[in-house]
Image (cartoon, rainbow, N blue to C red; front, side, top):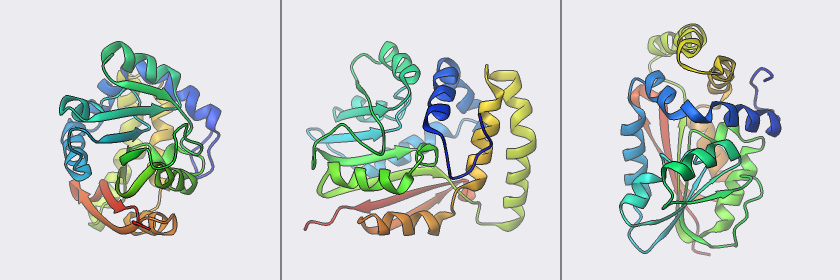
Length: 232
């Protein structure tokens, strides 16, 4: 895996996720100190979908982010480009519809979903602005976009500590709990290279979404952006 930047090679990223798929969810829980479950609940609430509606969960991986929707009786499609992730997800949750797909060229018709969401995956897309445009295309007018992504802590001293954790503490931990610690070095670097909260909000606006707002979680370690598709 090459060092992270905003220019990514899709095949390399896909192979990385295929490799870490079997233990991906366990490692994420450890590295996030158990916060991933809380973040998923906040995303679910922000989407605000109801039974009978249809939600696209993009970069869904093994489907942990799709589970709250399925458990609530909401139609959810878990879409990811990693076959390894999808295989793990299908074994664990055969009731969820898993679909292989490229975020920049989604295999869905226009206006197919009431909402689109992506959690901790947009920064791994080679062309994130194109993915935002594709999510807009497949979402119905008036529908919702929710993005959860690692971001920039708002308190400067904490931001320094957090950056030190990412680049120094995370790789040794990953070596103990992951089969591919180099993948987590990449993930740390991709977080550091990602735009801040206002930068991502600008991308969302430029892609054609309306009324973008964001909420900081865990001091800005994560930000949840929410927007709507214009009615016309």
